[in-house]
Length: 238
Image (cartoon, one colour):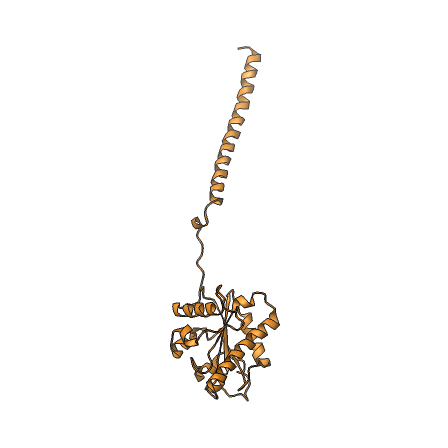
């Protein structure tokens, strides 16, 4: 083999080796690219998803009641008034529980719920009430449903007391609307007014967060605590 031929063979071999390596690298890269594409195009069901976390108070019974109220108020695409003027046929039929059992569902909310108190025969929020409503509204924590349950004491005519509790619920909604101008308000706030005939609160609820807890001149009797609106964000996935 002369020098010219030898140089050609050596040169060719020198080219073949790096080409082979590059080809191998490209092959590996192509394989990795294909694997990455397959992983990226995986269906959502192939990827683990964390379940929605719910607080312990989200019992099946509470979820059922919240869903019924939300449906009655038009918050679930029903025929209600979107929270403005929504009224279940009767509170007891919506709850499908005794008053005592209804109230017991909310006991785990004692650290989160707020009780907004009103004067006798009055449906307007005072300054303390407005501040308490705003405090409750600010405690959303990612929840999507704001529950307003209003009541009246047993003094006077039952029909009049139902009207009082309805107007108290509307006062809470009206203040939220005027204060925050939230475009989703009608989809977030559910109202349930109970009048005097269902689920009266006992004096033990005086120990909850309430608008007049610092007003020493205002007693907290059973009648006082029922001239009120109970408000709270509900985290339950309904």
